[in-house]
Length: 131
Length: 420
Image (cartoon, rainbow over all chains, first blue to last red; front, top):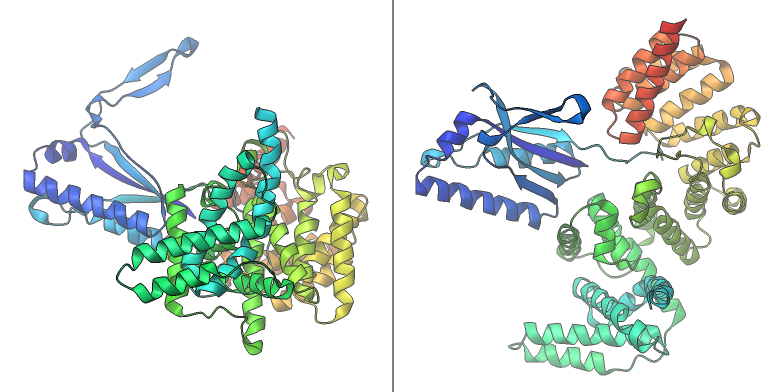
């Protein structure tokens, strides 16, 4: 079963992130690197991407003639996708456990940041004939 | 020339898949290290893919592969154990002994041992599947990764961990004890079934480029039956695969949309494959104990043999589901049984059965419960309730073509109600 683990944050979280101390950043980067290695070593890794800072984020809609209409002034309370992992595991519990590892990445002062991670199953073409 | 390259491509792939378990058995016997031997054989196969098209097929491909695998083994042992001189000497001696005679019985036994080993219940299903496809099926890691849509490195890691698990649990390279054999065979059949099932829904349209796991499942089941020709459940599994796969061209439309059995164009069913499945089953059934795979195959056969939809022998299908239900608590079996009841005794009877399933957690949460209920409500003429349950089922399934199908059913009924 494939799951996507999505890390969300408000713009303020990004702004704060850019002001972390070098030690705090280094700790966080090291943690994420070993987290990635864990995913690889356990044979569950499928994909991961981090996204650029949300300051340039735009919502795009098709206007008349299909021309893009962009909208980019977002309220402070809006949550943005920061990045995601796709994993292939046997059970939802396994996915939650891995999501908790990602959530526990250290924040300022080395304390777990406990960022919320949204876990969603990815639609596939699997079916069950029923034996 | 692209054309001639392609022409030599295919037979080499097929040949390698045939020879892999045979060569692996020989290398494991010689070196007593399954994990390393499996790597060595995979490397030998990759070497063959590169060298054979250029230099032509060797006179004895199996001996060629075995020699190359032996060399890989000694290289590996030598590099690992410069300090362990004795091991290197043993390995070199093992590799020097000529590979001249192949004992057919031994090769057969070894393949069976490999199958039991790779499908060991100590392994998680996804690991057992990957290892079986590589060590017994002779597929490359890249092909397996491609079939499951994961990166090659992830698949390599999964296979290597599976081998570590086998090593750590000390499973011997031999056939399981007679008292254990039945249980172990069940897990072999289950892994082969999962391989087939994984491919079954992804064999058309844009997925065509994926490694065809249904065909691999069928091939491995054939191999297993050759090894154990008297085993009626292996025959049942192979028959089930053939009878199910016979409908592959009819079960999806031009845009990959799902077409349910009742609406399939039966002219597209593969008659040859149906005949083979029926023959296998007819030979197996009288031989004694009838297991769940034979029963499933028998149900598939009844469906496949009905010339027209209205000719389907539902009382026969219901009787088979009654038997199957006693052996299996699979939600699909219980729900399909309810459909058969509805087809024989009317939708009300089927719906009554579904009401009795509320307390069963595995079924109550299954999207198929809502889907079957919707189907039976529609049969009973309650379009409004049917639309509601189709929608509920669509919200629960994790299969995209299935979700589209269920949404479409709900929309069809809602439109009908609105327009009436």
